[in-house]
Amino acid sequence: MNILGYLQKIGRALMVPVAVLPAAAILMGIGYWIDPNGWGGGSPVAAFLIKAGAAIIDSMPVLFAVGVAYGMSKDKDGAAALAGLVGFLVVTTLLSPGAVAQIKGIPADQVPAAFAKISNQFVGILCGVIAAELYNRFSSVELHKALAFFSGRRLVPIVTSVVMIVVSFILMAVWPVIYGGLVSFGESIVNLGSAGAGIYAFFNRLLIPVGLHHALNSVFWFDVAGINDIPNFLGGQSSIDAGKAVVGVTGMYQAGFFPIMMFGLPGAALAIYHAAKKENKEKVASIMIAAAFAAFFTGVTEPLEFSFMFVAPVLYVIHALLTGLSVFIAASMQWIAGFGFSAGLVDMVLSSRNPLAVHWYMLLVQGLVFFGLYYVVFRAVIAKFNLKTPGREDDEAASVVTNQPTDKTELARQYLEVLGGHDNLVTIDACITRLRLTMKDRSIVDERKLKALGAAGVVKLGEQNLQVILGPLAEIIAGEMKSLR
Image (cartoon, rainbow, N blue to C red; front, side, top):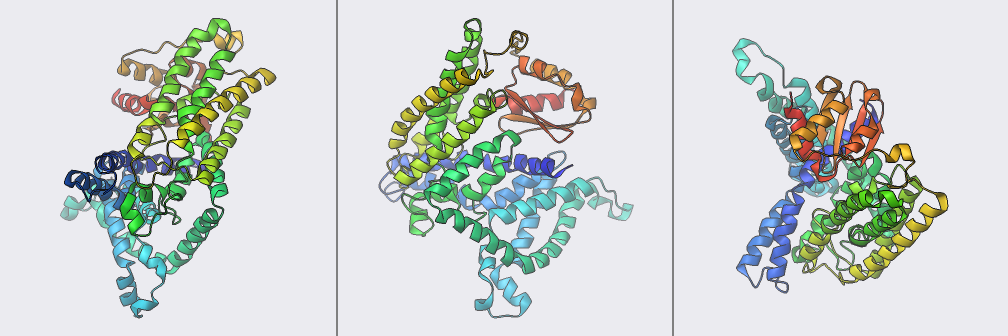
């Protein structure tokens, strides 16, 4: 597997632990709604909910270790997740300040500060990746009959614990350097203030076609480089009291996405509909309405973005620039809201009572402006350059009619057929909105047939990797495809 493909694999696995964040956001969001002033101090029910959500947020490093190990394992087995947990516990215990002082024989006050922050998402991801690789290598090993009980999957946590001892001693030497580099990177972005937030948002959108935005997000949204924007925001008053959060600053890597996802992209959808040929408007309307609603309500934007990402790349670059501008404006004006899943209506409502949400309603005003901006810019650029957005394709391309079966098993069967069947598929996986496939022969795939089945787009990576953008159906279709043997 090439480097890009491997990074893709890690990016996909990162979605496993990230998927638990909505649970924390809902619990804490309801708690803040019940007790918006005391944040749990004036209501036992609110305190119960906020603390329950905080339990998830405070455990993100270990969730990354377990989730990444599970997500990268070849058959998604619980033994891989257990190995990730074992690896994380060994590393964080051996590299705790007290253990480092004892092992090195130095006073506790001379232990580098980096070891006080050894329990973080970066180390969790590292442990998860190593555990997954060990699982993929050793889960099928058969030992001598005398040790047969420890063969196969049972062997993996044992091997992981031993390997992690070696990893710990390596990290004992290099972790202060790695930590220093991550902190310097985080501080350089933070020092750029609102401009840094805008630059991050621009690259966040640009990386979506290859699925590497998840890796970038982990730097800004979690505690990889000391920023930790989402957990600090969801922590609310407790984060403020602990000095982890600053009102008007924490959340600035999230807030500006709300105007884009709730308003900007629906404006683009309307422009694409109005620019479509008359005979195609009905078909385009059904696609754009569904995609725009998903973006507005849940913040899931990939079905809409992939409708123009490859057929009109200039529009996608404009979209990335406007996203950066939106995040920059929201950060500059200190209009703050946050999310646990994505920047849709649900998360906006849940975060509105969070003590770190500042003038969040102004994001709605900003969103209306961006709705008009997206509509005008997209409509003008489509007309100026005669871009082949949905509904404006040449007659041959436009003749493809989407005929998506309602039965998910049958739909999966048809996707499998177009992809060459199980004999042509090395791996089948999915993240929130896309099938992620490794294939023996990618050349046999007919992209037009995939789009006729309802795929919003297709991404080719390297020589064997293929991503099929399906929206929220991706996980369901992947599961059905695996079961069709």
